[in-house]
Length: 83
Figure 1 (cartoon, rainbow, N blue to C red):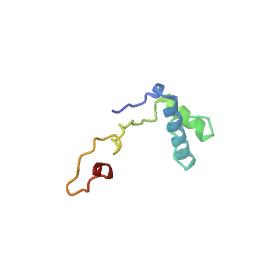
Figure 2: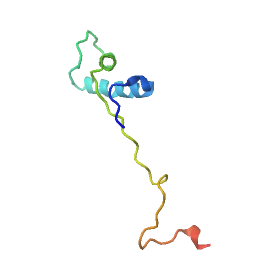
Figure 3: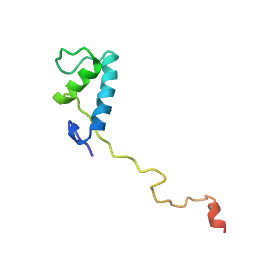
Figure 4: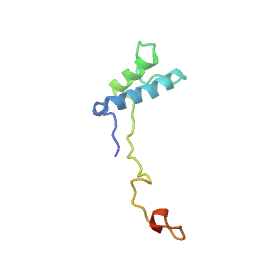
């Protein structure tokens, strides 16, 4: 799933996005919008509000814990199976 410029879905996502962008601005990245703000966090927030900061939401990959366990060739049986 890919969402672009829809920050209303999660305040947490907006905060993470703004924090990451603020670090980029502090490191020397040019602002994507014209602003009079001097602080990196404020610049990042204005970029998000203006829709100038694209982002992508990736689906989580299934972990080994949630994936069904298939026996592997040549794998030793689990200790629980020995009973």
